[in-house]
Amino acid sequence: QQAIASIDANAAQVRGARGEWLPRVEAVATAGASTRYLVTGGGGDYAVGASVTFNVFDAGRKTRNDQARATEAIARAQADQLANQIRFEIVRAYQQYSSAREQLEVVAQVSAQASETLRIVQARYHAGLTTITELLRAETALVRARTEVLSARYDQYIGYASVLLSAGRLKDVSRFTS
Image (cartoon, rainbow, N blue to C red):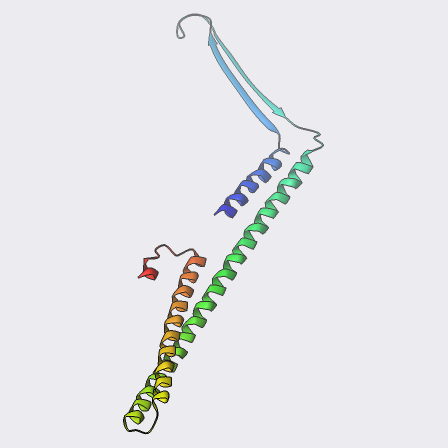
C-alpha cells in the first residue's frame, strides 16, 4: 500500500512538472453600484478581465520535469522489487509447508512400522524367543518415531502459518495455539 501511495505521489509530481509547460489562464470579474439601491437609479459598474501568461524561458523547468520522471521511475522500481520479494517469500513459505506435509506422511509410515515391529517383538518376547534388550530397543524406536511425527506435525503447522503470514492473510493465531 505504501509503495502504491508513493507511486501516486510521484505521478502527481510529474503532472505538476508537465503543467509548467502549459500557459496560465486567469479570469477576473467585478460588479459594483454607485447608489445604495442596486435595482433603481444610479449606474452599475462592471469589470471583466482575463489574462494568459506564457513562461517563455525557465532554465530549471526541464530539469525539474526530468527529476520528477526519474523519481516516479524509482518508485515504480521499488514497488516492483517489493512485489517480487513478497512473491518469493510466499513461494518459499509454501515450499517449506509442502515439504513438512510430505515429511509428516513419511514419519507417519515409519511410526506405523515401528508400532508393528514392537508388536512382533512383544509376541516373540512373550514366547521366549528374544531378550528384554530387543524389546526395549523396539519400544525406544516407537517412541522416537512418535516424537518425529509430532515434530513433523509442528513443522507443518508452522509452515502453514508462514504461508498465511507471508501472504498477509494471518489474522487469527488462535488456530495455531490450541
